[in-house]
Length: 119
Ligand code: HEC
Image 1 (cartoon, rainbow, N blue to C red):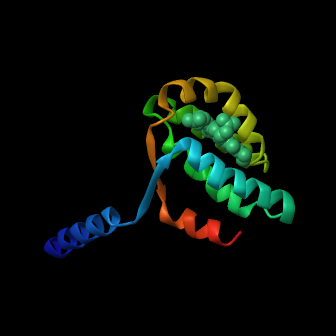
Image 2: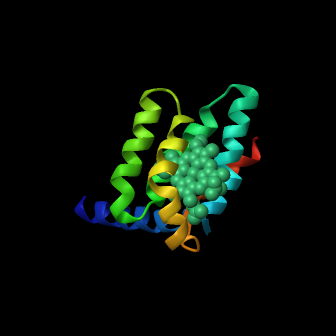
C-alpha cells in the first residue's frame, strides 16, 4: 500500500507539472483577460468568468504582496462585488508594480485561456 501511494504521489507530481500555463506580463493578463471578463460582466450581467479570473490574481503577486492581494480579492468576492477589487488593488499597488515589474512574467493557467474563448 505504501509503495502504491508513493507511486501515486509521483504520478500526481508529474501531472501537476504538466498542467499547461501561458506566460505573459501582469499588464497583458489584466488587459487581455481581466478587463475582457469585466466587459463581459457588464454586457451580460454574468460575473462568473470575472470571478474566476480575479481568484487567480493573488497567485500572480510578488511573494511579499500575495497576502494583501488575497485579502483584497477575498473582500470583493465576499461582498459579491468582484469589480470592486480593481480600484482597491490598483490604488495600492499599480503604480509601484508597473514601475519596477512591468516586464516580469507570470504564469496564467490554461483554463483561463479556455474561459476567455467563451466570451
Ligand atoms: C490584487 C490586485 C489587482 C486586482 C484585483 C486587479 N488588478 Fe488590474 N492591475 C494590477 C496591477 C499590479 C497592475 C499593473 C501591471 C503593470 O502595468 O505591470 C494592473 C493593471 C491593470 C490594467 C492595465 C492598464 C493600466 O491601467 O495600467 C488593466 C486594464 C487592469 N489592471 C484591469 C483590471 C480590472 C478591470 C480589474 C477588476 C475587475 C483588475 N484589474 C483587478 C493589480 C490588480
